Image 1 (cartoon, rainbow, N blue to C red):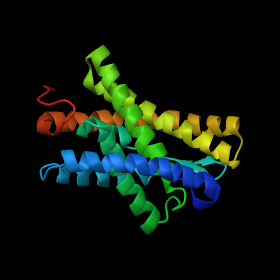
Image 2 (cartoon, one colour):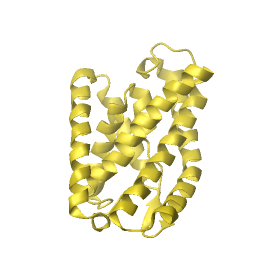
Image 3 (cartoon, one colour):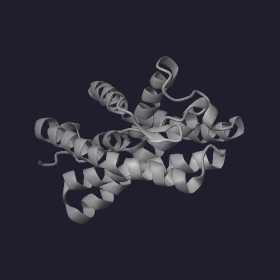
Length: 212
């Protein structure tokens, strides 16, 4: 899902960068207001974990690949979709600049797909499902699945707008793979939240003091 430089024309990439910068600014504002010394190690652990799970890439076709995202996990644990934007931006900068995974000109698009869409879809899906089902872990799993799947569809639409590949085959390829990958992401997200809740429930910002 990391879009390389050549896959999006520069004018379109610039638009995505402008949109991403708005959310990055809001994420930095969130960080200034919400981050404490106690949370910094958690941010580091989440960033490292997301970096690691994104390292497992599966070829999708048409020059693209699929992988886990991690935006929902960051947003749910830290209680804000802007946490996902903040952490995914850090991860994507390191991946793009140091490891060449994803382009520099297209980094705005990647931040939108994985950080913004992944974070907002994952967080608000979780909150809505949690309110309806009262089941934290099922809600987290479904929210993470939706975040992964919808991010992949958004990526396919961007590629179609860019003329990189046709819309319908792109959606089918990206959607099918990430619908399956999203199941793994849902299981990992629910499992990680279970471990946090059972060991340090005070770290769950979105569910303060919640019993397991």
